[in-house]
Figure 1 (cartoon, helix red, strand yellow):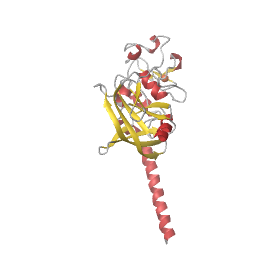
Figure 2 (cartoon, protein in one colour; figure 1 turned 90 degrees about the vertical axis):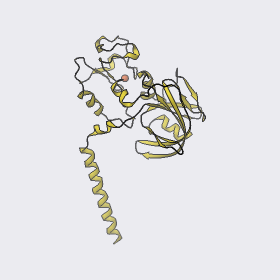
Figure 3 (cartoon, rainbow, N blue to C red; figure 1 turned 180 degrees about the horizontal axis):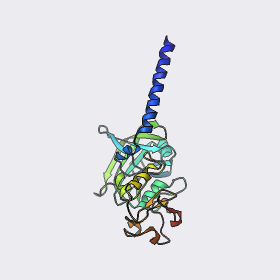
Figure 4 (cartoon, rainbow, N blue to C red; figure 1 turned 30 degrees about the vertical axis):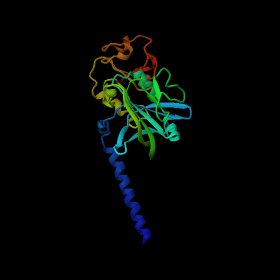
Length: 260
Ligand code: FE
């Protein structure tokens, strides 16, 4: 009798799984793009070593006590550091953050780059680095819990400290996509493979071609130019100086291809 009940339970679970897979296939993945995010630098440490990375999925979980949650890819060095030191900091980035800065913290690995070279930062109460450049506010937290969600871990931290540095507007993920031409790197929870590109194509009506960086996926949009590098809006890709480089990953013009 017990075996029969268990078999029925397995069958019900199997049918539920099939239904979920089917729903996943027929859903519109663009619905997920309607969720709002920001853009942050998350830092942590491991002994004397420090590292930081860009993240977009952060939220306050509770007010009493004050806790926040962040979603970090398991392949990232920062993930390893948070696991070990059980501390992390969040720097809230301003809308004026240059793409090159986002490129350094978002598209390069601390395993082979010193991301803090030339970057202003300080050590917080827990001796964890807090990035100050392009930062309008920061929060420092001690790890109190974590949830394994497959590719990522959600780390929950109790807030230890926080400060506002400027009254700039925080960079939203929508602003990063639409105004700055940015993409989700592969390790971001919001990475969507080709879907980002379809969205770009949907609104593409310009006569001037856009060019995509084959290394990091950054799109050069002539309509926006590259103001961080002094390139005026309306500058064709062909007219960019030969020494112009991808503002995100630093690749040369030859690493770009016309967007189809
Ligand atoms: Fe690039």
